[in-house]
Structures are given as structure tokens and as C-alpha cells.
Amino acid sequence: MTRAPRSPRLPRVRRAVPEDAEEVLRLRQVMIDSMARSSPATDWHADALPVLRAKLAEPAGPFAAFVVDHPERGGLSTLVAGTIEYRIGGAHDPHGTDGYVFSVATDPDARRQGHARACMEALLEWFRERGACRIRLTASSQAEPLYASMGFTRRPDPLLELRL
Image (cartoon, rainbow, N blue to C red; front, top):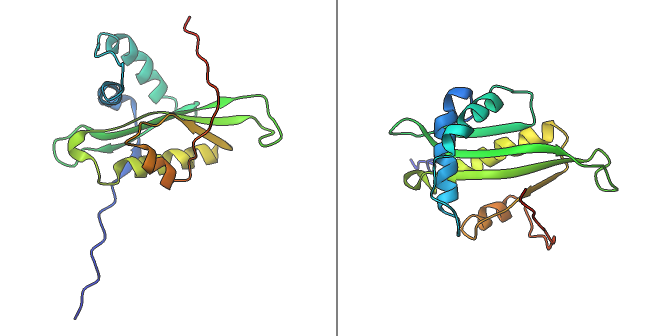
């Protein structure tokens, strides 16, 4: 008797709650630390924590974070966060609803297990439920193959930025 190949265990993705705020910030810092020209400063966490807790307590708000609990040590292993924003509609999206993915991080010891993909799929479903027609993100070179496999394409948009 031949056994079928064992399918990998899918991670349990859940919506982050206010009690996850410290771990969400820790994973956000993991992402920041992996970026070129990033600041290793963490003193901003104290100011960000109460705001993040409040945002996580608004399930109907324009912000969502999806997480996977770390399978061994407790805490979180993976974070994907995004927001819905309104833009004046256009020909391709008369309602003007855009989704933005701005924080994706997995602890180094939990990578390559499908956690980020599972969290991204949950966030994409959340965007669909809210009518988003376009989803945008900025990808590192390491993460770009994941996003490409999910249908994201590189755009030549000339993004400018001003800090106030």
C-alpha cells in the first residue's frame, strides 16, 4: 500500500487583537531592521504602542493585521498588515478603494513555512470584502518572488515623497 505524500501543515492565521500589539511592534521592527538605510532605534515603540492597540481594537476600521502564532516559543512568528484608503475613483476603479500592504515580517526561525503567504491571503481576502480593486506594496528583493507568485506585478510609478 502506497501512502499519499503528506501535505504540509498550514499555519493558523488570525486577525491580530490589542493584546498582540507588543509582538506586532516587535515584528514590525524585524521588517525595519531588514531594510537598507533603516534606523535600529526602538524608542518610538513606546509612543506607537497605545495607538496600535487602539487600531487593533477597531475591527471595522480601515486597518488590519493578520498574524501566525509562533509554533514553539509563544508570541508571534509572522505579521502582515495593511490599510484601505479612499482615492477619487477612476475608469478602472470607480469606487476609489485601494489596499496598501505595508508591513510583512516573519521571524528568521519560522521562515519558509508558508506563514507570510497564508497571512497575505487573509489580508487579500479582507481587502476583497471591503471592495478594494487595487493592492499596492513595496517589496524587498527577497520577498518579490512570493508577491509575484500571488499575481503582483512591478509598476514603473514615479513615487515622490515629502516628509512634514
